[in-house]
Amino acid sequence: MTITRRLSYRQDDDYDSAVPLRLNAAVAVDLVVLTIWQERLAVLLVERGVAPYRGGLALPGGFVLENEDLPAAAARELAEETGVTVDHVHLEQLATYGAPKRDPRGRVVTTAYLALAPTLPEPVPGTDAAAARLVTVTDAMSDPTRLAFDHRQILADGVERARDKLEYSPLATAFCGNEFTIAELRRVYETVWDTTLDPRNFHRKVTSTAGFVTPTDRMTRQGGRPAQLFTRGDARLLHPAMLRPRAD
Amino acid sequence: MTITRRLSYRQDDDYDSAVPLRLNAAVAVDLVVLTIWQERLAVLLVERGVAPYRGGLALPGGFVLENEDLPAAAARELAEETGVTVDHVHLEQLATYGAPKRDPRGRVVTTAYLALAPTLPEPVPGTDAAAARLVTVTDAMSDPTRLAFDHRQILADGVERARDKLEYSPLATAFCGNEFTIAELRRVYETVWDTTLDPRNFHRKVTSTAGFVTPTDRMTRQGGRPAQLFTRGDARLLHPAMLRPRAD
DNA sequence: CCAAAAGTGTTCGAGATACACCCATGC
DNA sequence: GCATGGGTGTATCTCGAACACTTTTGG
Image (cartoon, rainbow over all chains, first blue to last red; front, side, top):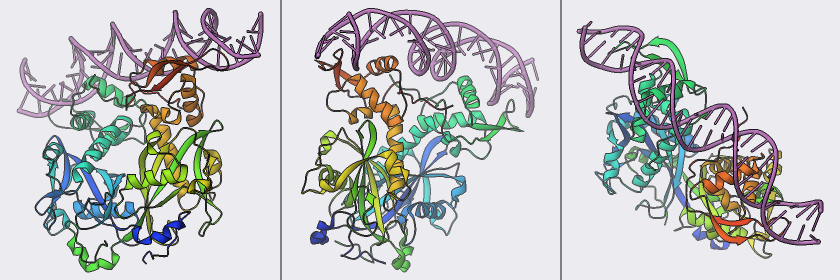
């Protein structure tokens, strides 16, 4: 199925006389997959094997298929690049980028998705995931030319979104495994926000915020005193929010 | 310029063998223009003169042009539909919708933009704006079939975004004129949130939150005691936030 | 018994809430 | 002088910030 020149749309039929101007573009999805790696916030990147930006790093992504919805395309790319199914990963739409020259080969409109994942499984050789690797966000952002296309901007937007969402949503648990301790959860906040938090106040706040985490009767067994294990709660919004320390 | 079958993209050159599946779609922008009208939250809608959904209501919007960026397309549509230039209106990207069957005529991917405007000027006859009219959000959402395409969902997303943003950003001022009183600003919050707020506490909170509003030395002259006029401040985020009353 | 990590109690201050009154104009 | 709408003061409570000690395991 293709869109014909005669396709009309809403009120603006007056555009029919200027049809050559109407945009028909390739549609892609790109993924900002964030995870905690080596105690740092890291992003999944692929090394480009072909021009343009050959040898450079890029966000994983690809074209949307006919008869495929955008969220489905994002989930498919995620599975292809990481081998991880959507069930274990938080996936949400981030933003859409469509500047005319953002891809030197032609007009491509891309919708970026933000994924937050626990530590990822090792790349599987022979799959797309083999080309993928983790890079700390600091490294990825250090050089303005490190990332291909406008992916530096997309990554910046994704990181900012993630930082904001930790405040008012229970999304930090998406970085943890199925069961986690309060201290692990705290280290997620500290890593993503790049601050330190008071362990005492953090513990009280998390356990007293309804629906954030659910206690289990299991405990950890390593190091010092055993810690209680928790699972994700059912809240979608935190009341009260976990306020991020602000530089005043 | 068109995207050829041979166009390659990142790692997934393996798709070249499956090129017929790759999506090439029309790209559109749609606008959720919210304003305060008759003491209610209202949205700008256009009546469709052509099939499909002929006679139904739809969000204003149209196709992106070749060599046009998405924000530029949104600004252009806004000017065409309302006669208002972007300077006086807050405009931000909302989300992108690309379900295969969302437009019965073919594959159209649309990026929705959210606009918050002070009371709009009267529609200008002979322009696109003549077809536009304001409808309260309550009315627009009342009947699931009232809006064409997936515009009911887009509107719902836009209203939710606006409600959230009033909490932690100074965006409520976008609904006011250049100069406004604290009481006017309070009525914006009350209208968008559909609650009532304590005038005393509201006044103190707004005037003590740094960068929210800037006092002028002008006053209103009507009715009772003259009220001081304010202009928008320069803050982009509110500290502390204006917390919305929650139903517990 | 000592190291390592987890969990708890208390105080203090800022901000949210609730409520009653005085102020400045038009008529 | 009264109706209309604007602005201020004060008490109380909840929540976030700061801070020191006890608990439970492994070796």
